Image (tube, rainbow over all chains, first blue to last red; front, side):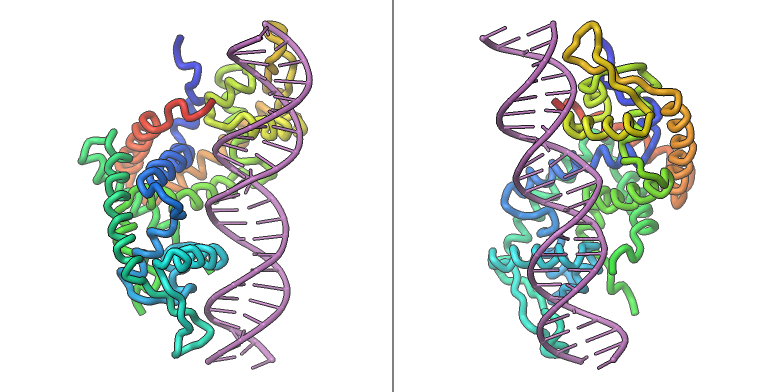
Length: 151
Length: 151
DNA sequence: CAAATCTCAGCGGCACTGAAATTT
DNA sequence: CAAATTTCAGTGACGCTGAGATTT
C-alpha cells in the first residue's frame, strides 16, 4: 500500500522542480489540443503575425524567445502549409518580410479555440480565484526572468 | 522605443505558455546553483535515496518520474563520482539495490543548501504571500497532472 | 570595411521506444 | 511459460553554436 511513488519531500517544496514537472503535462495537453503536425510554436508565430503584422524573422525571434535557427525551420513548415509567406523586405533586402496568409489566419482561429480549451483543462483542478492568482504570479516571474535571453 | 519585443497578448494569458517560458530560467538558476558536472536530476536521486533508503532503479524511476533509460545513465554518473552504489538485491536478483555513499550524503547536503538558495532567488520577484500561494497551486497541479506518467 | 540578417550543419541534453539479457 | 528488471541502441524535438552568403 501507501505512497510507493511519492517523491522526496524536499522536491515537493521546490518551485523550480514543481514547474519542471508541469512542463510535460503542459506540453501534452496543448499537443493534444492542436492535434496535428503543428509544432508547439506554430501558434505563437501565427499569433504574433496577426497581432503585429508582417515582421522580419529576427523580430519574431525577439518577440517569441525562439532561436534564429529554429525560426527558419518553423517558417519552412508554415510556408509549406500555406500559412505564412516570406518575401524580401524592399526597405532592407537582408530581411525577410514574413506575412500571414488568409489560410494562416483561419488556421490561427481554429488553433486558438482549441488551445484556450486546453488552458481551461490544465487549470481545472484549481478554483477560479487560484487560477487568476497563479496566472498573475507566473506573469510576474516571466516578466522578471525572461529579459533579453535572446540574441 | 516601446515594446518591440513584447510577445502577442494571447500568449501572455496562457498559463501553459507562461510555464514553458519559465522552464529555461528555472533550469538556469538551478544549474548555476549546483555549478558542477551534475545533471539536473542528480539531486533528486540523492534526495530520494536519503529519504527512503536503498531502492531499485524502477522504484527511483517511479518516485522521480524519470525514464528507466535515463536512470541508467544518471546512476552511471553518480556511481562514477562515488555518490551511489549498485549492488544486486539478494531478495530479487533482477533488481539493483541502489544505495547512497557517505560521499553522496555530504554531496547531497552541499547541493541542497545551494538549490534552496536558488529557489529563493527564483521566487524573489513575488511577495512572500504570493510565493506561498504559487507553491501551493503548483503542488495541486502536479498532484493532478503527474499521475502514473511513468512505466 | 564592420554589422546585420538569413541559412545551414552540427552538437548535447532530454524524453522516449524497442529489443536483448537475466531473473522470478 | 509469462512477467519484471536492467541495459543498450537509436529516434526526435529542442535550444543552441559556428560559419557562410548576402546586404546594409
